[in-house]
Image: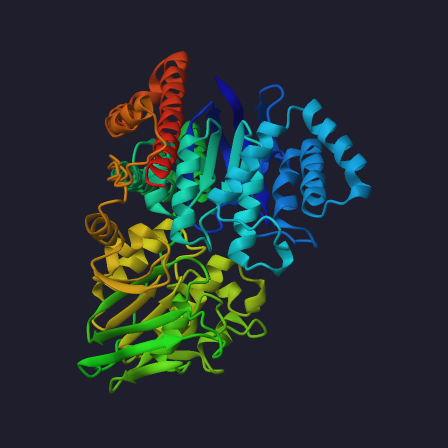
Length: 626
């Protein structure tokens, strides 16, 4: 069933076409990952699909009574409201009643009993009690404190609240613009499970390749105003994209050769030609117009790091380090942590937001002194530090001034380069060089900070959330560059695929407050954790915990149900993988529409069944081990 359809769509800003005769159809239940270079118009496309931005030309059709929810890339201005109020805003009239009920229940008094009765009656009339349970469940899964004031929360917590508001109404279509930005890995995992389980049609703009592979039934790329679909995984997209690019380059070469021949012909004198072939002349004019209109592929970022002389063999030693911002408090962010960082190590640092990842970096760099223990830095260190707040960029300076001190040249790897040429490698055209930093987008600021840092000789790279706001192609180029870096790397990131590709060891801020080091990247940490903790359920097949308490509350049937749930979940997930393989086939979307819809519906029902089975397994296991 078609829910939304975009036909022959055109929209332009500043003379540049973001959509150029673009077409797209959204079917019920499918999950689309929308990718493309920064600035190509992905956010604008989401606004068009949401109906908040009008097309210059073309049509947007939507099914009757269609409900659409959105999550924008930037967190909007937040008022003096609780997180609960913010989330239930997504429910309209019912949300207002639930918010009033929540406020009265929190501060009930005899004088407000009549008001509480009226609110309860209103909720009952709208069938809202099940919805209230859904709201509370969503708050729990997103780890959101219901009564916290949103304007006093961190940016990451605010973004989680806005995400919950988009999800709570269970819309027909869910449009998400970079939902993983500033989220920690546990929250990204929760979001991933929600997107898989939701029956809604999802369009998500993201650079998170692990999320794409886990959620998307197809990838749609916005490239020079056109929308091109690639069913299947991200790896399959890369393969088909490469073949398409090679075919396009070959066609362009043939066209240019033919145009050159026609240009040579038209330059011949009348004498050589005798008679003018007017049809050929008209065709040449059309070819010239076509060549002029051809939109060249946006340039690629060319990243290089000015590598310094080698540091000493020992980069940093942490011995029994503890740290808390309140020295008199027992609550320490870091407790008795020791590690030795050697030259060439590639350390990833992961953990929940606010757990202390950036603090650990500042301790290692000597910007903070430990409450207890010692930090010893090695010799000959040349440090380049990318901080997630981009504090090393001055919004009042121009792009040019950010990487030079009034000079027109910059020295990189011992070679003098003109600043315009160097910044062009980071996709800053000449007309942007004198623009203030404050006018740049998030992705542009990240590229500028990289240009500034990578021009400095460094043998220790410290990167704190460098992947936010980057498009996938730039992210992969950064990944390739870091893979070739000969120095030492400290990387804080929530991008699971990026961590797996880059780091050789991972420091983890565990949920119990401890800090531990593991060999390998994110996936290696996950495997080692499951091996070490036999009570932790593996994603593919949960293990039933040993129940030593003979006074279990489970009845005979529930015990049998609990024992059978792991096999049931494994069977459901095998069926889900088989369906996803069918959807990934190149010819899947060439079938009749009702056949496509049947498979998508079946996939969504399997996702919901798996979610219910996991919830049931968790519930029974918790009761059995109580």
